[in-house]
Image (cartoon, rainbow, N blue to C red; front, side, top):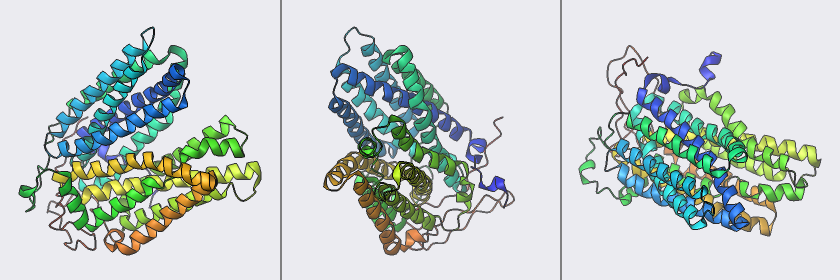
Length: 460
């Protein structure tokens, strides 16, 4: 196996003009959102002098994203998904424009900020859910892991570069120009999405239950209950979202164990992203994993162990240097494991979900992540009060590792799950699928029969 085989697979960008447009649009959008987030926190604090008010603004965003995700999932399974994304991103651009107008006023109003934040949260929840449901229809089935990697990479690009750029621009110009730039980037995103083809839901589904689908979220939950792979993924995802690495406690840990060093705090926040980027860059092997379900479960278990190691780094008496070194390594491992999990979760859910249900299944998964962030912060803070920040990390890591073991034992379909084999240029016959749903090796009556997508025309 050559070095090239281990590098990130960019074939979805090369082969699909529409996927390439979505990738670029998502990068541009996340860069703008990342810059605006920094400006928002700084502006709210400057206006109120209250960290609590900053938290309120963040909570408003999280709650409205959650509501938008649920609504977006239902809409994405009933309406043209391109139209939904274009409308939602256009609405988000108006929210950023409103923030900019308010910021340029002699006395900016907090209530105006919260209204715009809520509006943007709803629009973002709708658009993200519809976009995640769209992406699988733009690539070949065997490219799902690669597509998942590239979508994950857009988030990493945004999380690493956008806050820094936003901080620099904020220092130079203030919040108004930053919000204006965010509105411009969002309009660019809207234009790029408007250029892809129409994407009606369920275009290729012919299963017997399609005609009986009422379009409600309950149908998606029933499907997840019957399909062992999807149900197992959602169950494990719910636990890992709630008991993930408690980053909310980083400031307290640094204050108590590293003399409140801002540099060390920055290093702790950066370490998981380093692991994520390294895995994404060398993710080619994931597209050829014989048992991606098993790899996903191992990644979830590894993430739990890394979280335990991070917590233990503050309890072993290693000294400042040893403590920091072990903490950084464990955070990088957790970030790497989380990226492997995210890539394979995306591919397996998309492969095992009919297109008519993708919007709603994605909305459930997105809601889990958003709710996990909200409730998980409270859980970590409570556990830290009983033990310590390091103890809270150990508790969360143990729960995540045990959840991975329990799901691996209780849901053999997920452990044995596979994905479509690589593309064969010379094979014009339809792929055959193993009908054993319990083994997770192919779709049954409850899962879509994914046919080979037509080879796209050269786009230059």
